[in-house]
Image 1 (spheres, rainbow, N blue to C red):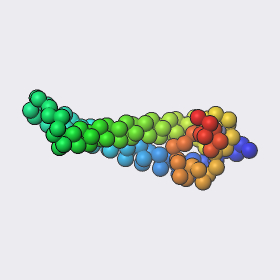
Image 2: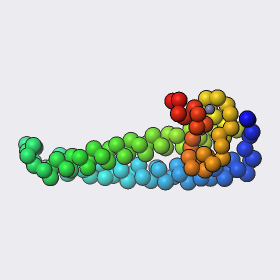
Image 3: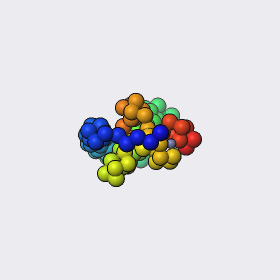
Image 4: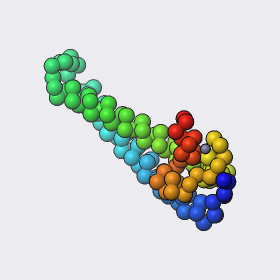
Length: 123
Ligand SMILES: [Zn+2]
């Protein structure tokens, strides 16, 4: 069933997406800063790494975890941006793959989704 969302509903989601976008951009800036500090700390420390140094190992782990969190955040930001493009195109709330309406309950939980449940499971 294809049913366009009411303009007021789309507007509500657009506001949520814009907020989410700002939030994610702030997070990414923070990650960038932290990673930059980690890089500086690493380059100024002793150049001969000791593989038995547990502390260095755990710091490296922290660093990698931070990178993957940042990557996830960037991915999410991409989805939010894309959903906002769908809003601009008047296609928000319609599945990008099959064209059916995405249930409102799903958009409430995942405002940035552009696929219905069935198509999201296929991809
Ligand atoms: Zn679909």
